[in-house]
Amino acid sequence: MINKLRKKLNSDIHLREILTGSAVTFVFKISGMLLGYLVVLIISRKYGAEGVGVYSLTLSILTFFSIIAMMGMNVSILRYVGQFNKTREEYKLKLLYKYALELIIPFSLIIGILLYFFAEMIALKIFDNPVYIPALKFIAFLVPLMSLQNISVEYIRGLKKLKISEFLRSVNRPLINIILLITISLFINDTLLPIYTLGVGIMASAMYAVYFITNYIKNIKPNKITNLNKKELVKTSMPMMMTAIIAFVLGNISLYMLEIYSTTEEVGLFSVVLKLSLLISLALEVVNTISAPKFSELYWTKKYDELQNIIMHSSKLIFFSSISIAVVMILSSNFILQLFGNDFKMVSNVLLILIIGQMVNASTGSVGVFLNMTGHQHIVRNVVFIIMLLSIFLNFLLVPSYGMIGAALATMIGSVLLNIILVLYVKMKLGYKTYYIPFK
Image 1 (cartoon, rainbow, N blue to C red):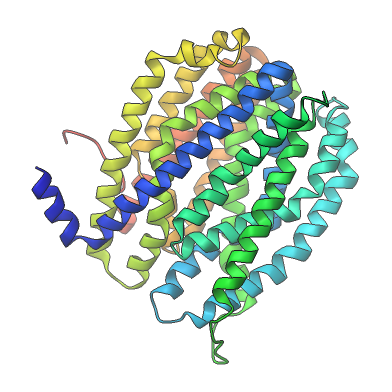
Image 2 (image 1 turned 45 degrees about the vertical axis):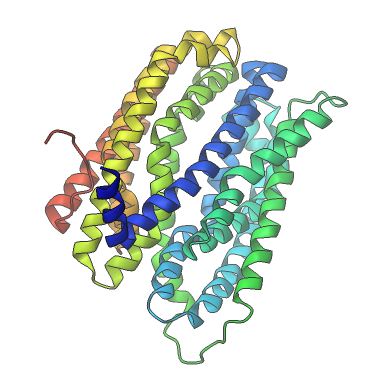
């Protein structure tokens, strides 16, 4: 068995890259997730479920405005770096990063300024909670930094410098947050302290990512003859931005509905179980990190058979890893939730609903990443938009009456329908099978 596996790895360089890259990425990803849960655990122990709610919703708002500020370039830049790295067009790498910064920096500053001046209106008119006023004004300064960090991390990921990209994406920020949070909380008792320490982590990650890239590309000689221009970059990125915004709304609308129709405490409770349920898709996220540039490389060099082969290997790895995590979580859900406080034990049924949705997500494989990396990003955008509208309707229908249970059902239904539709499109229209069903 071992010899057979070794022979398979030696003969399939793409599978070897996926597995070896996944091992490295898994270590950083699981470390980052555990550190992220530790941040929430510290907040819940010190400030309760309401403190977790304030932190989670504020981080969600920061993420939303950063998605807008990035204009989808965090996804398109990954595709282009993977494409240029394998088509002897390395000279375009320097120009690509230069164009991205020229577009992102001024636009993200404008978005940050708008958030700052509308912070009071958002806090009072939408959430009816004045505690969000200083929180939103502070994260307005973080929008350009977070946008810069995310763009740069995806660029590094496209270069296949996975140790660095995953450390910056998953580990660095929560690690800095924990160190500062534990230290400063000894002297200052402020509900917004976790948000301030988060800001330091974002700034540190952004600065190092830019430093790494500038050192990497400084020796690349430019070529005056190039067909890469800003219009092409923006044209590719905009559908991805719309997809990212819609997908974000799809994944976070329940938090906002709970804040509007229920309490900040329920936002905190739901945000914890939502974060825990994402553990099921850990393998999917890890494999996507390595496979995204690989999909781009194989597709654009027309190696279609190799592409289908690596998709299937990835799907099997994702499925069996995900179902193992799901079983462990279901069996130990009460114990895990109690770690965050006694109040969290009441939401084990909410966690179960979300786990079901995540298992369907994992079973469908890297379908969204596949479409984005192969030039079909408009399909993802259109489908996600339709599902987003359905999810908003379901949240309006279910959350006022059923609270967190309604939010969980709306989230699960939206996730399941999204993945099934995308899988069917890829299978019927493009001829690729991204999902894995055992014993079939």
